[in-house]
Image 1 (cartoon, chains in turn red, cyan):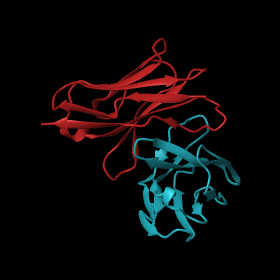
Image 2: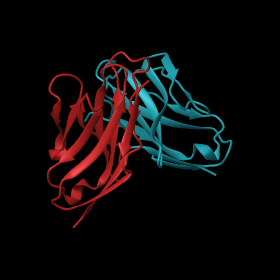
Image 3: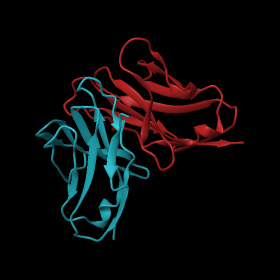
Length: 115
Length: 113
């Protein structure tokens, strides 16, 4: 079975600072990995995804994530935080052909950006 | 515009009063699912459907029912709501079983008193 652990339920950074949100996964077969963002009072929006191929994936709003199989990690980064990045971020995992085809979500990390 | 819609967006009800939350997508997606979001627990899948008339339980199905009579609609039914079903509910859809990129509705905030 797959699982996702997001380290840190709350992360606070200053505007212009590096954003690093951590995600570790557990999967017995090669995973598909996702990062979603949820702005206040809104649904979830896909930031980026890894399925196969290049391990460094770029998403919207300047975010990127790197799939590291040896570390079972898929950390999300952004070089310079903006106030508009304040939101909750969810890492999710699934596998191709899985019995449910559903996404297994982490518990989320709330990002605050200080001026 | 491609989207997933949910209604109502907000609902306050009393214990035991049956309710239905509707979900509709206009992208001709085969796969649809329902999640609930609770603080500190992330999103957990309630039910999913791989196509018309094909539904199955997710991780937390107790107290919920679903139906998939049409490809575009996937209503969530609470026959006898209880306070522990107070939550934020999301419907999602995706294009094929192999894509896994799910598109989410705006959410329905349900309070059961």
